[in-house]
Amino acid sequence: MKFKYWLPVTVAMMFVLQVASVTAKESKPDVKANTKDEFAAVADHVRQQMAPGGRFDAVPKNDQDTVNRDLGSMMSLYDKFGTVDAMDQQSKLALYNNQSEVNAILTHHDADREVCEHVTPMGSNIPKTVCKTQRQIDLEQGQSQKMMQDFNNQAVPRNNNLGH
Image 1 (spheres, helix red, strand yellow):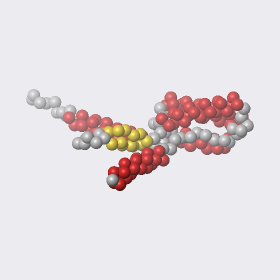
Image 2 (tube, one colour; image 1 turned 90 degrees about the vertical axis):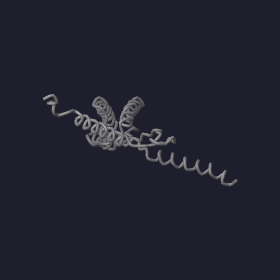
Image 3 (cartoon, helix red, strand yellow; image 1 turned 90 degrees about the horizontal axis):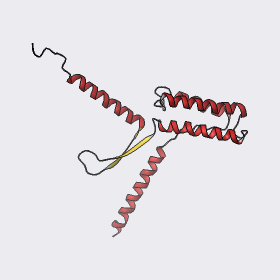
Image 4 (cartoon, helix red, strand yellow; image 1 turned 180 degrees about the vertical axis):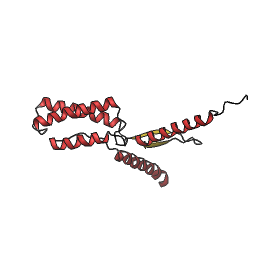
């Protein structure tokens, strides 16, 4: 009788711990600063991470242009006011809107973003949740495409002298 009671409780606790560990792994980009110097460091870091091999290197060119434009707009506000506290309400609103747009773009293209899916493994009827980073997914897709290209290149006969 006690076993019947503890089993569901144990399963529920394991589920809660698993969910907690997944959420603990999330690290959202946060383009936010209170002073001009803090913002300059954040902006430099974001630009470095959009370079090849960086955390945000999958950001498309047009979105990179948007991020750079918004970072420039935010920097001009910091140049004018120095700190967020010194900004008027309209400037704070503009800063917030720019921050939101940049954070949304970076979050969507974050190579460290964890993506989970519910899959049924081959040979099993028991579905499970599999989580990978966007970087891992992109790497696996690239490897699969390369393998298919290699296979197709090998499948094409190199000698067309079959009838001779």
